[in-house]
Image 1 (tube, rainbow, N blue to C red):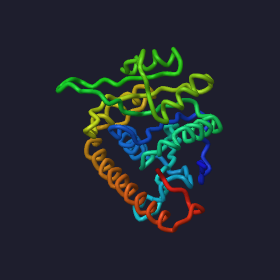
Image 2: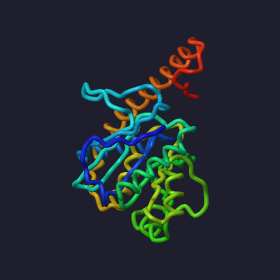
Image 3: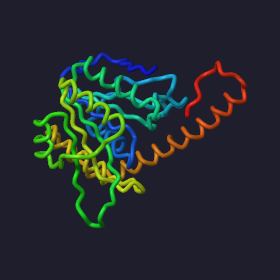
Length: 252
């Protein structure tokens, strides 16, 4: 079971929702972590599940859930920052829970950030792509410098959420997709995503310090992902060694 918990009283109605769960290139987490800091977004809630890996994050000596919700009243933004990749078997449920949260809180727009693995040409300027839930949003994405995806496929939580948004037509949704080399994690990917979001939302987030800070986020995420893997393996061995099927679930 996945639950969203808000522990601070915040009026999120009308705000734009931005998500970027870890995926290829770690574009989403790098971009969102930077936005949270630069916009001084407030930690207001988290997402929890007994099916998540049994880990916590520690920041400034404070233990925190690894999937957190941040809010900026000034910028009218709500975002989710996740420090581990959501297990594949939980993707559909997570998308359902997040979309329900968006509707329950009466958020006004959805933006998902992700990477698209491609063969990049040396020296060629990167251009972001967009999948939009309505024709009007396609034009909006083009104005922001994004190239609409006319035909293709998309995966992950953002893809499932935009499918719901397009079908229901209640909350406009744009997927901002950055072309990435799948073997390289580079701050320029997050920089492109933020510049596109600046244009989409008429923000002015300065990206000059992104390279240094994105590399720090990347290092932390890699450490958490590795600890997640080690914890998973030791946890699984402990459960198997107990010789019982009545304990906590084992993560695949």
